[in-house]
Image (tube, rainbow, N blue to C red; front, side, top):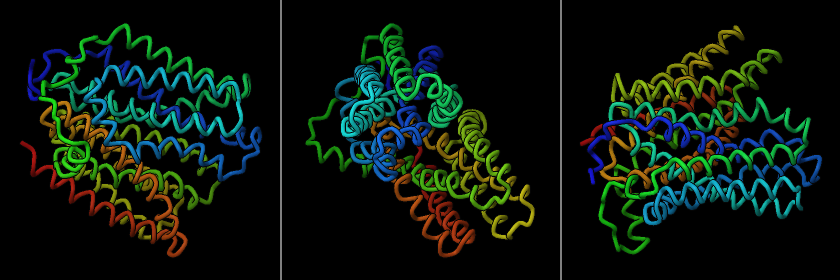
Amino acid sequence: MPSSNSASEQTAWLEIFLLWFAGISAAMQFAKFSVSYNELLTYYQAGPTLTGAAISVVGTIGLIFGVTAGLIAGKIGYRKVLIGALILGASLSFVQSLLPTFEIVMATRVLEGFSQLGVVVAAPTMIAKLSAARHRSITMGLWGTFFGVAFALTGLFGKSLISHFELSGLYFTHGLLMGGMAIALIALLDKNEQRYHSGSVASNEPYFKKLGKIYRTPQTLLPGLVFVFYTCTLVSLLTYIPNFIESDSLRATMQVILPLLSTAGTFIAGTLSQYAMRPQRVAQVAYAGLACGALVLFSNLSSAMAFCLVVGQMVLFAGLIPGAALAMIPRLARNSDEQANGYGLIAQLGNLGATVGPPSFATLITAYGLNGLVGLVWFICAMGSVFAFMAARIER
């Protein structure tokens, strides 16, 4: 059995693309409720707060159990966890397509959190193992786009499905997609679980001792710390920046363009990490570019078009960060267990950032306007750069 440091001679592109699509189908667990938010409000009459909670509750599972999922996946087997998570997700979508009571819907959303977490821990670990060293940063950059692609596809086709087949049609189609991915991966993935491990010796350490070790291990912790400041920032930029654009048509255009720029940045980061510079340096460049864009915003641009161009530059550079953070994990990790733990920690800290970031930005924007947003962006860029620098120092 080769060590984690030895590269596969060939990249299994078909399996990698299927794993990427599996990630997209898992991210659609967020996107399908986001795109159908107004219809859910009308159908269930549960009010904005509870209906909004139905969207976010999926992420709270990753916030609580992210690292635990990495430990479990390493013990049970990544292939088993991935396929089980997809089957669970498909089953829950089929239940939702029956439009049961809102209480049952909320219960399915909690369980979908476990399904989503299983995919985002197992799939990237398997992608790293199925990638040759010369392609690994590219494939991790590809993986990093799954969330943005899921929202783009759901936004493109979701409303049409709802208009033709109502809520049931949207959720049933998602169930078919996840179920189809499970069947395809059952057929194509190597059934030998050791294919996705690095041959590390299983540890009999107590659970909480393992957990503490993960948080104390720089190889697993630092990519997550680079990532958490990205999630603090991007969701807030996409949410609040359009409110500073006075033109309705320009605001609507930017709401489409900005997520695409973020997704493009993530894939660009994978390419840069593979061929131009280490992912730690890509993260440093990304945070520097984001800070420079914020500096330009601080000058109070008078032109709406110039404002939009600067914001687009900021979101593009912000999009580089997840691609860089994900590419760091297989580069720094010493075995597949550390890789899975790193992805679990990214899931946990990413959800933490998405939870803490928006209210923090909202508070400062309310108090100081655009200058409050700029100040927080600068602080976040400084912290992210520090952790990217530390990650560069520990690379073997």
